[in-house]
Length: 168
Length: 168
Image (cartoon, rainbow over all chains, first blue to last red; front, top):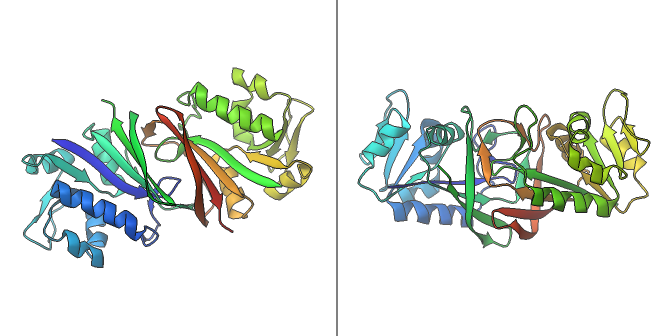
């Protein structure tokens, strides 16, 4: 199974404003993300991301995709194809029949997967914006990982996608 | 005068480890940075960056370049071509005869220039590494700036340079 972190960020590594606002992420970026998640057939998010993502109208595109929410506590999920796991490893175990799994935020979830050395590749779509403060791509766990640049492409004339292998 | 922020960062927007370590930045990146500073003939850093940068052997390449240190307090500078300014605007005023000025860290200095809307362009060299924690590209001031992607190039097979205009 290949574990892929797929996120959009500002040029300075923020994935949301402090109030969880991601409205600055473009429709083209969403389409690229959505297509990646649909091709994989499954994705993993943290509880805070679950609560904000499922309220967005675009989420309807992904409503039938298998989704695992990593949360220390149980809570009410919204759909029979959504599941709760209590750790990154448990989430991957639940999805072991998929060839690819997409890790999709937020910062604490992303950091926990990296800190446990569970991520094989990273796609980062860099939006043409910077904020002084917000929610970072990785938050709450320290780690160091070297990367190998696998490729880059322009999503639009203003947005670049960087693709890396995480060296283990 | 064109004001250019030129930095290297991890993929997740860190410019140093918590202990100011920047040894993970490649020689090729340094060479690109050094050539940019030498072409401009001047650069601006914060006091913490001044203290670490001037201790590095590679700094000898830049020892004759005009350098302004933005610091609220006066302190002992190391060379007659180094100067102290007490604010971003005062630093630019001191360098008003230069066509280009390079803003070169750290995070607090960078953020203060952006928050005061003083930066025209950003070059960010993305090193193939991620850390969970460290010093961010922008720290200590909140702002929001839209960017326009002006170009990109590979510094090496593993390092990409992104070049943006800051929209004002």
